[in-house]
Amino acid sequence: MDLSIYWKVILPLIPAYVLLARSLRYRRKNEMQRELGFATTKSLSDMTLEDAHVIHDYLTHLEFPKVFSLATMFAIFKTYGIPSVSKLLVSTGQLSADKMKTSKRWADTSALLLEAVLNPPGSARAEAALNRVNFLHNIHRHRGRISDSDMLYTLSLFALEPQKWVSKYEWRELTEMELCAVGKYWCYLGEAFQVPYDSLPSYKKGWSSGLEWLQELQKWSQDYEIKYMVGSKSNKQLADSTISFILDSLPTALKPWGKRLVATLLEDRLREAMGLKRPPQSYYRTLSLVVDVRKFLLRNATLPRRKRARYLSEPTETGRLHQLRYRTHPWYVRPTMKQRWSAKSWRIWMSGGSIPGDEGDKFHPEGYLTQELGPDYARQKALAET
View 1: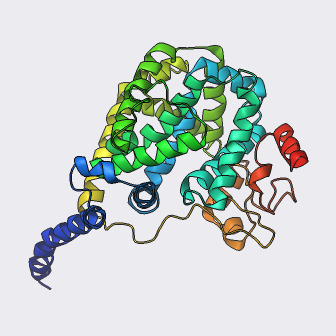
View 2: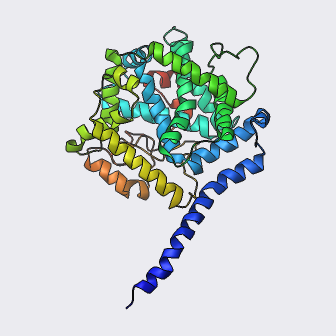
View 3: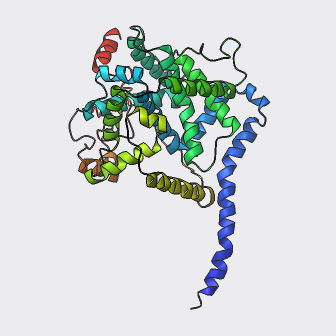
């Protein structure tokens, strides 16, 4: 059989497929921009909150779901590089060497963020999550344990880290329209979280667009890090316990490698503030190579996602909600056949974790009500007030 005939057919199809993949990759972004009409920087001032939510929704569910999710979780981790934040979290005992407490804290934080951010603005589920977050924060704010600056810095990370991660690790950067939508949406969320903006230059006159707000927030956040992101014992304590939790499902032999990989992802200032050693240069070169290859393949050889990433569950008849993902401990995960018998569940189990439904009511397989989320002392107080 003459194989050259097949190559004569296949080789011309390769550039055609690449052109198709690239065209489809950019089509959704172009259609979104054409449909909403934000073609110029000046037009961004007309963007409404509803427009911003539509754009943010497609970024988080279709365009960059994995990176947006990882960047948001990293934003939480990055706050541990600020001693005033890390000392408070250490004092509460919710993030410690106790992996059960750490996993519960991450599950609660994840549930609240998903509900507050991914549900439509003004919806009952979003408002319930916003109210719960404010209730938990106000316990400490009223005692002077959380400063307004720390609140603004934390908000800045949620708004800024996704665009940084997209720029570093994805096949394209965010457009001005998308950046404006992120700014507009997180500006609204910051107000809903009762974060004061009086530290930003245009606070009194207001911002012309979400893009201007985001740019001012970025400059303020960078200055804040230079001044306050310094090493401390509490920083290192939280970093070590969180990295241990993140790597819990890895085999013991791979955990030192995993810890160095995590350190490779950190900016130098953050890594030093957390007391982590700089990994060998080979880790940076390998990561750069993997990222470059991934970018090339995504841009030229893979088709865009067609199915939306799913993060939110539908409420049960009693109004309870469930987590769809978990790490180590299946807090609020419904023990369905898929959740119990998936490859990921068994990998977690083999590493010492738990499978949904195996330990009775320990991890609340019945789900959660938003007003129950948080530390036990806050849960009992909220339920008593309710």
